[in-house]
Length: 156
Image (cartoon, rainbow, N blue to C red; front, side, top):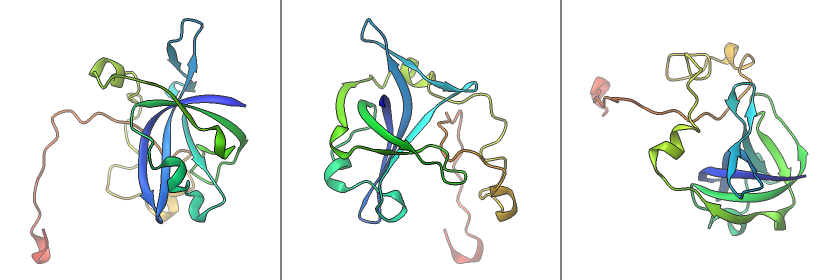
């Protein structure tokens, strides 16, 4: 099945790539609408048979954040909390548009309905809690972030 997504992640993963984005639909006017799962944006993470699902560099290396891509999904393949995983036909990934980085465009992609990220307020999800998490991707907006340096144990 053909789907569209806004690329919001493209990072190195075992010399290959990890790509993900929020699914959108294309309207008759050519504009895009966000697909929701519940009351939250629906994420897509294209994966392959490579180690940990990495996408080959020659396919994803030139993908850019905020570009809209068309992709042919061959199978949804959630794995634990990585419910967003989908296998795809490799030659189907095509850039079709780009969204502006204006805050009005980005703000509609943010999740505002969660009190915590990954059910936790700390910096890691405890092993016994990971089974309760049904997602691995979320876009947040940091409002008035603060940066601090911790010199504990001689480390910065």
